[in-house]
Length: 77
Image 1 (cartoon, rainbow, N blue to C red):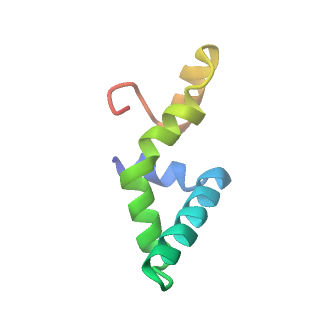
Image 2: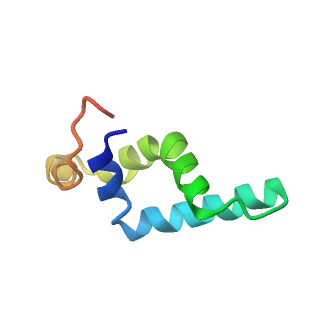
């Protein structure tokens, strides 16, 4: 994932909530706190593409506006 896309995603409070949820789930599985950084990288690698498709491209009429906001184009999705 491009660095600028990652940075813009991390500015979205909804993404931080998802990462915190992922942190909790993965820490429970591991039996200890895995840390925010590890949870963040894991979530970005595994779930960010699906999250962007679901949350940023949900309305066809606003796709270009939302994608432009995050610097996302259809090539990386």
